Structures are given as structure tokens and as C-alpha cells.
Length: 232
Image (tube, rainbow, N blue to C red; front, side, top):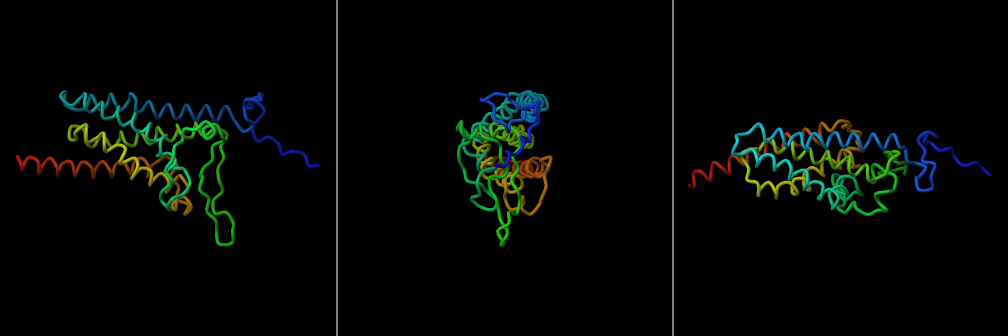
């Protein structure tokens, strides 16, 4: 009888308890959570304070709350449907199937990326899955803070220009119909992922998308305000 394969997790990082799975690496999981926390702190309170301090006094509270609301709204939308649209099973080559990422069974299992696999015509797997040594809960939160800071970076383009009520509707809509497309295409197993396009630092998914969206949003808000002035 063949011996079982060796545990890939170093002994020093193994839990040594029946309640801790063999694949869990405490060091990897700790760093994943620390990295997510550092990114989150850039948004809350980092950009909240920055946005409240760089605009005129009459817009300070509104600008700070735009960033605060964006972070809070993204967290709710992310676990309700947006994570699965970004990193779940394929619906289209550029979009995943919407679904909640809240169940205990889902969150405590080993992280897996991407969930969508594609095969060549001869049946060979095109891109192998990555199974890091931390749970899905860490992956969901790690990706959530990046989605949140993308919206907050976008908010910098419309400070003092956009009504807060309009921003409340804009955040979940842009997250759903824009951010998830880029995230799935490049990171979640979409067509760009399988073409070999690399985006290690979020240059496309986060910075490019928020920059272009911010410019476009500011332009349309400017036109709206311009026509509104003419009507008055």
C-alpha cells in the first residue's frame, strides 16, 4: 500500500489540532489578512480624511461620507453577489455568475483561484488552479478591500461635483457592471486570464479602471451640471 503524500505545509505552520485543516498555513493566512488590513486602512480612514481635507469647507463632510459610504456599500455588495461575479464560475468569458459568498461551508474551505477552468481541444487543462494555504474567507476579504478602494479612488474625480444621493446609486451599479468585469476577465478566470495577461499589482483592474471611470464620470457630471444651469 502506497504511503500518503507528504503534507506540503511545513511542520512549524501546521495546526496540530483536529479543528485546523492540514492545508492551512498560519503564516500565509496571517500575511493575507495583514495585507488586506493595510489596504483597508488606506481607505478607512486614509482617503476619508484626505477627501474631507482637500475640498472647500462646505463640501468636506459630503466628500468624507462619499468615501465612507463607498467602503461600506462595497462590503455588503461584495459578499452578496459581486465576489462570485468577479471570482466565481463563468457566466460569460468576461463575467462570473452572481451569488452570495456568505455560507460557512464556502468560507472555511481552502481558497481556490480561479473557480472556472478552461481546456484545450485535446482535453488538456489550459490554466491550472491555484490553491493557496488559506481559507476562502481570507480571499473574499482580501479582494473586497481592493474593490472598495477602487470605488473610493474613483470618488476623487467627482468631489464637490456629485450629489450624494446619486453617488449612493452609482457605487453598487459601477461595482456590479464595471469592476466585476475587469476583475473576472483578468483575475477570476476570464478570457484575459487564460490569454496569459498578468496584473499582479492591480494596475488594470484597480488603477486604470478607476482612472478612466473617474474621468468619464466627471465629464458626464460636468455636462449634467452645465445643462442644468442653462435650464435655470
